[in-house]
Length: 326
Ligand code: TXA
Ligand code: MG
Image (tube, rainbow, N blue to C red; front, top):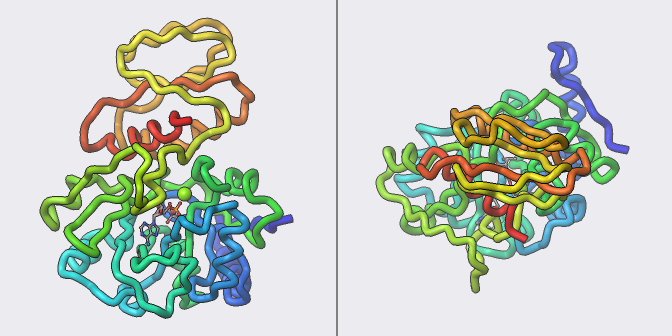
């Protein structure tokens, strides 16, 4: 059994954080809220603890994990290079949903970087995540707290259903405000997008100039970031995406995510409709939660109307293409 602590009352916060920190210092696993999705934390410099993350998630050892810290000073102990672009982005967007990939220090266990020369780091903006990082005073490895290739969790209940009994503690702070993962940016050379996320490329480009975005969904010979794996972030129910305005035959036992103006107002009986918001941030916030909810209903298929093309929809469209890939 995994213990769940609800931290949503002022009295619960301090003892909850203290308990989580004790578990992490001893090499245990704690699921914690961030402003994006729930993460699964372990002491990042303890190889045995990090190995437990891979075990609990069923994650292939070829997929590196993000290291979370509370302060920018701590990043210097993790990386060997800190380019001006990193300084500018960190100043502007940390704490926040931006992960920077840089050359690693040799003190970081190989498992964290999947044996590669680069490490991914970020300072999360959620008060509980920051409290935990400060209390432990440790860098914390933290992939999303889901079984490998499954939907990311945006509530403690999502975490429990995926990882119950496989981890030591779940810190519940309610639904995560962002709902979608951080943007992952490789700064080891010319800036390169590895995974679109909550912070848009346009927002980042306004600070550091052009970013290469040739993210491809085709199988790659050398995989720079497994977040680029074709199938990833998928519900158990088969998911199809349809273009805005595209005709689709809706059969009973279908879950449908509509997009405003898609002419899917009338649907046959047995189709469960979730009307998604037109605002990209609101859409992101509800995205995984809606997929989780429909996925739990034992439906035959899920149909999602793709939001329009455009920079502000890049991350959602990316996740939908991956969720639909089989
Ligand atoms: O919002 C987020 O980023 C959440 C919260 C918990 O911080 N974390 C998260 O972690 O989404 P995860 O492991 O589910 O996804 C991390 C992504 C993966 O695509 C991984 O391949 C990539 O970052 N990544 C991690 N370390 C890397 C590295 N050293 N080089 C390249 N890509 C890396
Ligand atoms: Mg993940």
